[in-house]
Length: 139
Image (cartoon, rainbow, N blue to C red; front, top):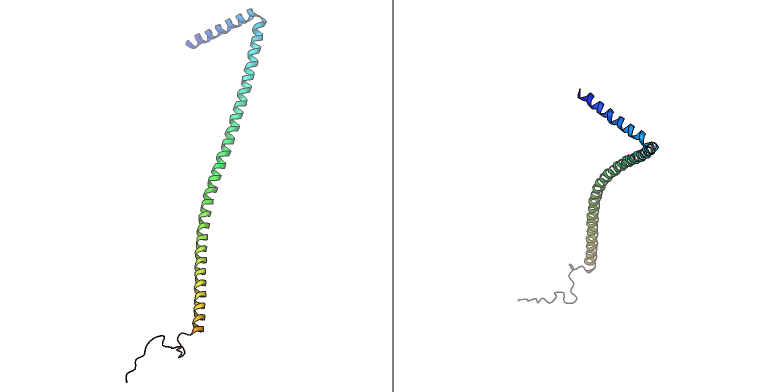
Protein backbone atom coordinates (compact mmCIF):
# COMPACT_ATOMS: atom_id res chain seq x y z
CA UNK A 1 0.00 0.00 0.00
CA UNK A 2 2.84 2.38 0.74
CA UNK A 3 4.18 1.97 -2.77
CA UNK A 4 0.88 2.99 -4.32
CA UNK A 5 0.84 6.07 -2.10
CA UNK A 6 4.39 6.90 -3.26
CA UNK A 7 3.39 6.41 -6.87
CA UNK A 8 0.38 8.65 -6.58
CA UNK A 9 2.49 11.32 -4.90
CA UNK A 10 5.00 11.15 -7.75
CA UNK A 11 2.19 11.45 -10.30
CA UNK A 12 0.81 14.45 -8.42
CA UNK A 13 4.24 16.17 -8.56
CA UNK A 14 4.56 15.49 -12.27
CA UNK A 15 1.05 16.80 -12.92
CA UNK A 16 1.80 19.98 -10.97
CA UNK A 17 5.01 20.46 -12.95
CA UNK A 18 3.17 20.07 -16.26
CA UNK A 19 0.46 22.50 -15.19
CA UNK A 20 3.05 25.08 -14.16
CA UNK A 21 4.94 24.66 -17.43
CA UNK A 22 1.77 25.07 -19.52
CA UNK A 23 0.98 28.29 -17.76
CA UNK A 24 4.41 29.65 -18.43
CA UNK A 25 4.05 29.03 -22.14
CA UNK A 26 6.78 28.97 -24.73
CA UNK A 27 9.52 30.30 -22.44
CA UNK A 28 9.52 27.10 -20.40
CA UNK A 29 9.80 25.02 -23.58
CA UNK A 30 12.78 27.10 -24.62
CA UNK A 31 14.26 26.51 -21.20
CA UNK A 32 13.67 22.74 -21.55
CA UNK A 33 15.29 22.79 -24.98
CA UNK A 34 18.28 24.66 -23.50
CA UNK A 35 18.51 22.13 -20.69
CA UNK A 36 18.22 19.28 -23.18
CA UNK A 37 21.10 20.81 -25.18
CA UNK A 38 23.20 21.16 -22.04
CA UNK A 39 22.47 17.55 -21.06
CA UNK A 40 23.51 16.41 -24.54
CA UNK A 41 26.72 18.46 -24.28
CA UNK A 42 27.53 17.04 -20.83
CA UNK A 43 26.79 13.52 -22.09
CA UNK A 44 29.14 14.07 -25.01
CA UNK A 45 31.86 15.37 -22.69
CA UNK A 46 31.41 12.38 -20.39
CA UNK A 47 31.69 9.97 -23.33
CA UNK A 48 34.88 11.74 -24.46
CA UNK A 49 36.30 11.53 -20.93
CA UNK A 50 35.46 7.84 -20.68
CA UNK A 51 37.16 7.22 -24.04
CA UNK A 52 40.23 9.15 -22.85
CA UNK A 53 40.34 7.16 -19.62
CA UNK A 54 40.11 3.89 -21.57
CA UNK A 55 42.88 4.98 -23.94
CA UNK A 56 44.97 6.05 -20.94
CA UNK A 57 44.43 2.63 -19.39
CA UNK A 58 45.57 0.96 -22.61
CA UNK A 59 48.66 3.17 -22.72
CA UNK A 60 49.41 2.36 -19.09
CA UNK A 61 49.12 -1.35 -19.89
CA UNK A 62 51.52 -0.90 -22.80
CA UNK A 63 53.96 1.00 -20.60
CA UNK A 64 53.75 -1.70 -17.93
CA UNK A 65 54.46 -4.38 -20.54
CA UNK A 66 57.44 -2.42 -21.84
CA UNK A 67 58.73 -1.96 -18.28
CA UNK A 68 58.46 -5.70 -17.67
CA UNK A 69 60.29 -6.43 -20.93
CA UNK A 70 62.99 -3.91 -20.02
CA UNK A 71 63.44 -5.50 -16.60
CA UNK A 72 63.80 -8.93 -18.20
CA UNK A 73 66.31 -7.56 -20.70
CA UNK A 74 68.32 -5.90 -17.94
CA UNK A 75 68.54 -9.17 -16.01
CA UNK A 76 69.79 -10.96 -19.14
CA UNK A 77 72.27 -8.14 -19.80
CA UNK A 78 73.62 -8.36 -16.27
CA UNK A 79 74.08 -12.14 -16.55
CA UNK A 80 75.78 -11.90 -19.94
CA UNK A 81 78.06 -9.08 -18.82
CA UNK A 82 79.07 -11.06 -15.71
CA UNK A 83 79.86 -14.11 -17.88
CA UNK A 84 81.84 -11.95 -20.30
CA UNK A 85 83.77 -10.37 -17.41
CA UNK A 86 84.73 -13.84 -16.15
CA UNK A 87 85.83 -14.94 -19.62
CA UNK A 88 87.92 -11.81 -20.08
CA UNK A 89 89.50 -12.24 -16.64
CA UNK A 90 90.46 -15.84 -17.46
CA UNK A 91 91.79 -14.74 -20.82
CA UNK A 92 93.87 -11.98 -19.20
CA UNK A 93 95.30 -14.41 -16.65
CA UNK A 94 96.15 -16.88 -19.43
CA UNK A 95 97.86 -14.16 -21.49
CA UNK A 96 99.80 -12.94 -18.44
CA UNK A 97 101.04 -16.49 -17.71
CA UNK A 98 102.06 -16.96 -21.36
CA UNK A 99 103.92 -13.63 -21.30
CA UNK A 100 105.73 -14.59 -18.07
CA UNK A 101 106.69 -17.96 -19.60
CA UNK A 102 108.03 -16.28 -22.75
CA UNK A 103 110.09 -13.82 -20.67
CA UNK A 104 111.51 -16.67 -18.54
CA UNK A 105 112.42 -18.64 -21.68
CA UNK A 106 114.12 -15.58 -23.23
CA UNK A 107 116.10 -14.98 -20.03
CA UNK A 108 117.08 -18.66 -19.89
CA UNK A 109 118.24 -18.55 -23.53
CA UNK A 110 120.29 -15.40 -22.86
CA UNK A 111 121.87 -16.98 -19.76
CA UNK A 112 122.72 -20.15 -21.70
CA UNK A 113 124.27 -18.10 -24.53
CA UNK A 114 126.35 -16.06 -22.08
CA UNK A 115 127.47 -19.18 -20.23
CA UNK A 116 128.39 -20.92 -23.49
CA UNK A 117 130.39 -17.88 -24.56
CA UNK A 118 132.18 -17.25 -21.27
CA UNK A 119 132.54 -20.91 -20.18
CA UNK A 120 133.32 -20.19 -16.54
CA UNK A 121 133.77 -23.90 -15.81
CA UNK A 122 136.94 -24.06 -17.89
CA UNK A 123 140.07 -23.05 -15.98
CA UNK A 124 142.62 -21.05 -17.82
CA UNK A 125 146.21 -20.36 -16.64
CA UNK A 126 146.50 -16.98 -18.22
CA UNK A 127 145.88 -13.93 -16.14
CA UNK A 128 146.65 -15.57 -12.80
CA UNK A 129 143.91 -18.07 -12.99
CA UNK A 130 143.67 -18.44 -9.23
CA UNK A 131 142.07 -15.01 -8.95
CA UNK A 132 144.04 -13.79 -6.03
CA UNK A 133 144.12 -17.04 -4.06
CA UNK A 134 147.53 -17.73 -2.59
CA UNK A 135 148.83 -21.22 -2.84
CA UNK A 136 151.11 -22.33 -0.09
CA UNK A 137 153.43 -25.24 -0.80
CA UNK A 138 155.26 -27.12 1.88
CA UNK A 139 158.15 -29.04 1.18
